[in-house]
Image 1 (tube, helix red, strand yellow):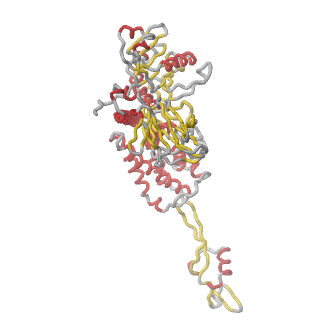
Image 2: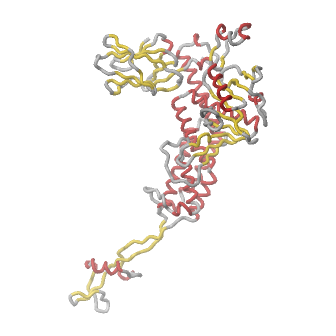
Image 3: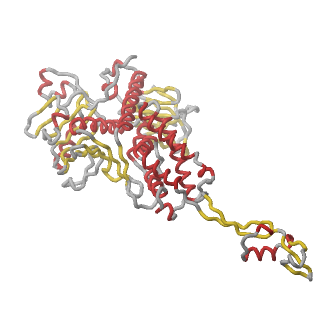
Length: 543
């Protein structure tokens, strides 16, 4: 089956399987691990390059005046980019979006792929994305995140954009600090003594200085003839007195750089309150929305204070202001601003994964939250912590869940000291008070067991062959690597399958294992490697 990629019908993509390609509006759907060809009909002298995602493809061969570029998308599910270059210039394509589908998702829902057409697969794919993103949003909002950053570093605004999930937790966790800081600023606002020269009537003069004298000398148009008793200036035997003179008036103003900063930050916080409410309206419970609405109402009250009505727009950031660095209220706002502008990849990477429907990354995030939930049932209460370093980057491994019994579950921690060979980075690593006890790796992979092939590795299959989803064997091998190199008590694959198995070091195999079998509140109960089913729960599919 072939589909043209452009209106001029020079570029087409084809595959031998018509069930593996589909166009819906401006989106072209493809499948991972499927062979495709891009055929370009053009002159021999033209240079053609094709890029899929980050991979530049090679032109395999030519037939007459056509270029043949074969490709296969491996280990990627979600949105991607397809670009064609003709003599180094981008070719305008018919489709704005390219999306890669996976045969794994129908298997997760227990559907036979042969009985489905591509529309059914797209429907299942979209449902899986909606289900898993909905669960992630709920966990992101409901779990108690604390975002920490150092208190003594130069202000460096992050290049990465803040997102709504980060803003939600910042506002929620710092509500009291924000309110207290603005209350102090408005209770004891910083005022600056200003001086300005002003022409005033002669009889209103209260102070005389050099500007007053120079004004009389340089602006004779304000002089009028007067009697000798009232004369201030004598010129050509005539007496003059000034009608108006320059006077330096002194007054206090709230329109300072420090107050402009406070007003600007207040506007930012109110804007993000609105964005959080707009973005998360359909994704979070009413009680969480009420928290943000309450914060917004308080900020709006501060905004309407008469002090800010006299304050202008911020054009220069007062980096060196001693008021911002030392004065109560202002000092707190500066610290909050630094934390607010610190870049947190945990949330930014999640937002990118959601925008790109990056299933593997979304599944990794989902597994982290699910694992935190399950471990909290064993270890009791937890709080999630994000630590940000001075330049706005995330400390390696400094996203973790801290449980009441003192154990910690780290997200993407690079293990250098723990490994006796090369550094390793499992998805999640579990520590007790004495150090690393085990690791988990989230893998959006599964195999459908072939009864004849798998019987060689599974004796039970010889007796009663069944169709089951299993963790991929290479990932189980990797668990042995983790356990050996890190000297961990266990290493476990988390995968969206139907079966959980643990292989103990004493050569015993345990089926239908779960986290409660693996751990209790104080100890690791099983040592070895294995895989646990971690599968998003979904409602029944209705076609």
